[in-house]
Every structure is written in C-alpha cells, then in structure tokens.
Length: 130
Image (cartoon, rainbow, N blue to C red; front, side, top):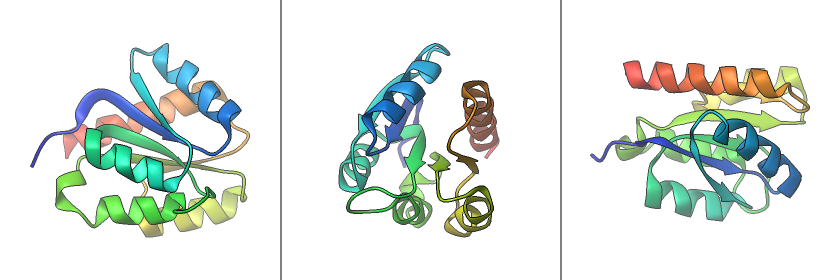
C-alpha cells in the first residue's frame, strides 16, 4: 500500500471559480494542489497521485462527489486519503449524507475560507493519526 502524498491535495469541482478559490486558500498553507473538472477526472487523479486529501464537490458531471468518496472508502490502497465534501445542496443534507459515504468532513457553499483551511487541517490530522 503506498502512502498518500503528504502535501498534495486534489480539488474537484466543475466550477472553475470555486476550484481557484479553494486552490488559493490551500496553496497559501503550503499544499500542492491538483485540480479536476469532473468526477471521472477526479477519480483518475486520485488513483494516479494518491493525494493526502481531496476536496469534492457533491454535484459534478459524471461521477458525483459521493460516488468518488464511496470508491475511496471501499479501496484499502486509498484508506489514508482524507475527504472533505463541498456542496450547495444544503447544510442539513450535506451533514447527514456525507458521513454515510465515508467523508471526513463537509462544508456548505458558500463557506468562509478560514473555515475551509481549518477543516482541511482537521481532516489531515485525523487521517495521519489513523
């Protein structure tokens, strides 16, 4: 089993402005950001890079963020990858549904950038502890 790349994060969202916002916030904290525009591209990048964590939009073309999260959690080789779900479907739905698929955390859009960074750091710390 190969270990996740400690400073590499994947941001998957079909909204280019959202990807840019998340990338800028996390790059300022020293992370290397890889982007994906849809679910299939996200899954390809995850399998190729094994990032430390992924930021997944729930509603994307092709595979949804929930489907990708379920895939990650069903494969032992990806067990160390943290998952943060982002969505505009509504806080209650996101908070109830994301854990069912194995997400470590969920944020509702719009979100505060500092909350995004803080949540990602909690996800990474929890995954590092095992």
